[in-house]
Image 1 (cartoon, helix red, strand yellow):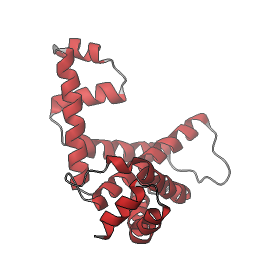
Image 2: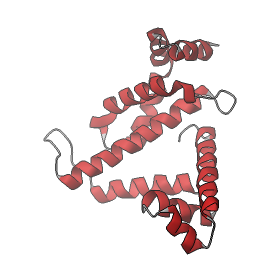
Image 3: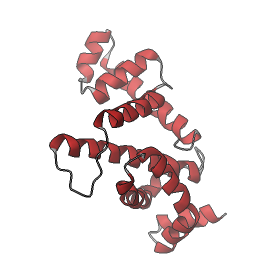
Amino acid sequence: MQDKLMIKYIKKKNEKGMEMLIDQYNGLITSVVRYHLGALINYEEECVSDTLLAIWNNIDGFEKNKNSFKNWICAIAKYKAIDYKRKYLNKMESSTLDEETPYIDKNLLNIEIQEELNETLNFLSKEDEEIFRRYYLEGESIVDIARNKKLAISSVHSKLSRGKAKIRKSLLENGGK
């Protein structure tokens, strides 16, 4: 009941909804972010804030008949934390870390990201996983993938679309963890 009211307020851009969200779910959001950020504790507070902002900005994307509000929030928190890991790696590669940022082993962080990615993609068939990796991670064009796999371009689009839906569904069912 409280979730319904909270969602209603946030959709109407009433700050009372965010106050309710913070009161009820801030601990959960923080724990999901902390779990997925690992050693990058300096980014925790900023990541939690970005998660709250993402909920505020994307509340219309929540579909109550597909998953619970709690699981939807956890999925957003998880992906914000993964984004922060990527940002950290980019900072390391461009050597723009400041003195307050702790040094985290780049290889270890890459391994963590790869493990989370593998865990996310394990819901796909081997062929669909390969297409996902080639398109989203390697930046290969759909035309090249279709030609190489001897598929119609529309088939590659369909596989990517269905794959995203499968991943989204599985992540939301697992509460973002």
